[in-house]
Amino acid sequence: MSALLAEAGAVAAAFLTFDSFEISDALSQGGAWIVGLFATVIGATLTVFIYRLVPFIERHLERSVMVYAYLLIAGIIFVEVFRRFLLNEQAPWSTTLPPFLFLIMTWFGCAYNVKLRTHLAFSEFRTSLPRTGQMFCLTVDAILWMGFCWVVVVTSTRITANSASNFQILLGTDDVLQWWFLITIPIAFILMAGRALENWLQDWNNYKSGTPIIERAVIGGDA
Image (cartoon, rainbow, N blue to C red; front, side):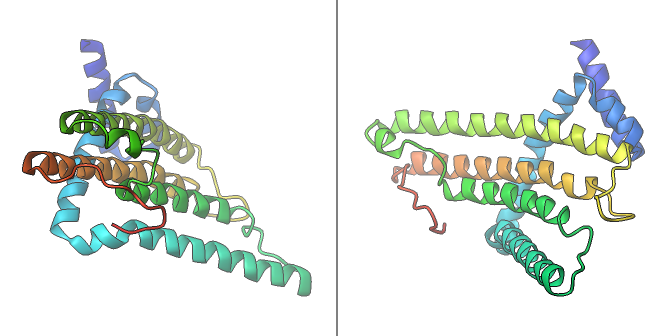
């Protein structure tokens, strides 16, 4: 255990250097999981705090990222198809940038759908349980979501640091680095953890106040 704590300290110290080589090397150690756990929990808590402090961000952040990423993808495809078939020319990055934008759109969309609870929830079964059973299921959901986000935050941060340390360039460009896009993955999953924590706090308040805990989610609906 002391070795893990020492490795965790080395990871934290590496991030303070802002050196991609040191960060990438430190993240290969097991202590990265301890740092990742703290980053996920603290990040989720800060996310909930910011959402409550600024409701406009809570309501529009993920949706805005999704919409603008989608419009940018559509615009690039439309323009470059026109240029390719009518002008016989095409930007070399037009086939490599959209997949990264789709990546951003997807994970921020996942965070938003955690808010809407449109994931697999077994609502028909859970509503038949007593209130304590419902709260237990929702607590297990929150723990699983936090664990899932923790795993992705650690692994995606490793990939991002490795990309930065190797100076991986977006194909078709001269100076656009891939890690600028990859860093959005751990950010999106910290937001997702924040949504999971936000949902659980709402469920707990409903449980204590006696109001219905589980409501049927509607795909495509709003919260």
